[in-house]
Length: 225
Image (cartoon, rainbow, N blue to C red):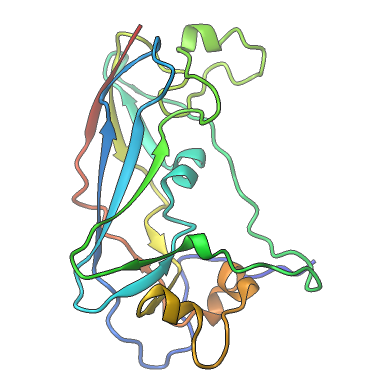
């Protein structure tokens, strides 16, 4: 099995004289901010990326997708009623490349072009995606061994006020290139290699960059019966 270096904080790329990194910020919102456990659906979490440069860039967004960030527990949920951080279910995805003989497809749906000052929005369900959310008191009896952990609103307490904040270890764009999606995915030298894009940051066209999350507002939300 091939093991590819996936250190997301040490991406240098092939450039000897890299251009200034892109200036991309992120905004977010939760809709609605009051969740009722009698509802059949969970709130929607939205991320909007904004490119403040004067040139379009195309990013490969696997490490900034809100559904992945939520699943990995990279958002901080604080319970103001108990004055404690909420323990969340955390999923870790394998970053080891498959054997060299296994074809790695180029996942077109993960490429997105960011035009100057035009928001690009990504959404995910703020809870368990395939089942209605349940409060902690009910979820504790399900027998699955995760009685004190939450995912989004699933496993929280009715009558409590919560705050959502960015956690650690997210907001890094590992692979990006100047230009629009179609030209980036089909460069003059030939089509991109799916294995290199997905697993080998050393062959990325530019060093990766961090999206600015410093100015993200805290999102207050409530859970009710």
